Length: 158
Image 1: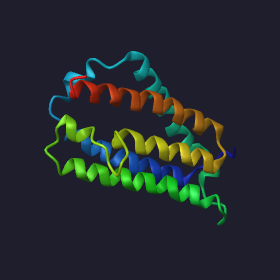
Image 2: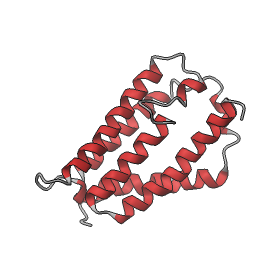
Image 3: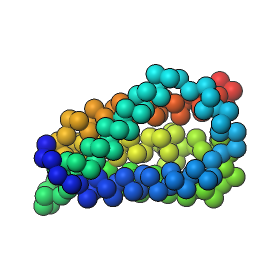
Image 4: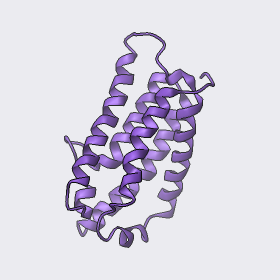
């Protein structure tokens, strides 16, 4: 692991944060009703994962390409996950903005808006050989995907 600024990490974070900032003005109908019942343990995992992933994305320069080799395909796959994630956001923003719209799968991935970014940051951890990012993305995934799964179940009456 090499300390230093990661422009790839910054790009990935921008691809993650920009649609989320837009979402704050376009939340699904009745979203607040579901947030009140979030599991506090999953929420703690989500918050810890967010801090670790965000910080790691910026302070480890080994996420930046160091020439082309087979590992670059992992980097490309990570970026493609975020491109698909952003396309899923476009689909949501063009929808009626219901809870079902928010939790729909996309291209076969359930809970697309929760799952694609977690996969992307896990892959960037693999690419950079960064155990901190790998652990952070697992913690984030447990919390973030777990919370969204609970919301999805509540929306579907399960």
